[in-house]
Length: 194
Image 1 (cartoon, rainbow, N blue to C red):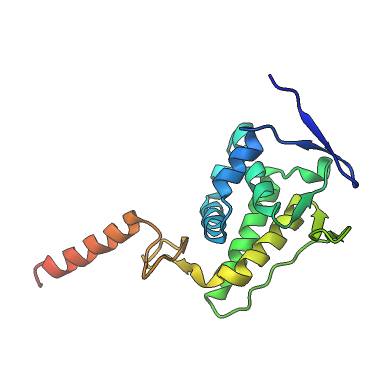
Image 2 (cartoon, rainbow, N blue to C red):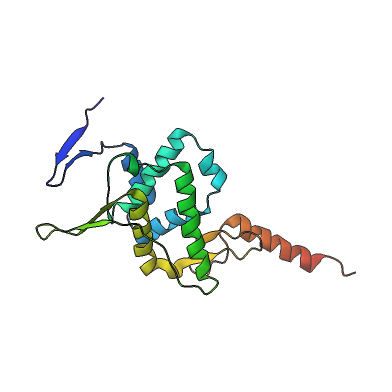
């Protein structure tokens, strides 16, 4: 087993992730492009609250690592107990953001409350925000949606209500929803008139 590598910075001493570790897998899952990050975000927001609440400790750790990976393009989470999100906090966070996105489709402005973060810029380097993962996640969501909000749609299948990232002229969140609607239209066309 490889020992942890330590990186010294002006602010503090941070643990560098080991290659192939949970954080590297989380970064790969979230992706580097805006579209891949938007796809990941929408998938997370479509997850059922039960799947988050009843998930194992390992699944919660993976989801938390993905949240950090999504937010790290904005800044670095503060360390300590406040940097750990409970399943209940994750559920509330995702419910709030999903509700804000759904409100857009009803004509409301996009509005997300972002808890306090610290801004730091040293020696002409890029600006860095520091705060708890929830604050950084909310900030990362707003930054992403500033440019990519037009790609988000609600599934056209009645009763589905899943969000999805529209590609070309897509109307449905999945192949399953598309096929269900095609079957419904087929049955309506081919059923005998009464």
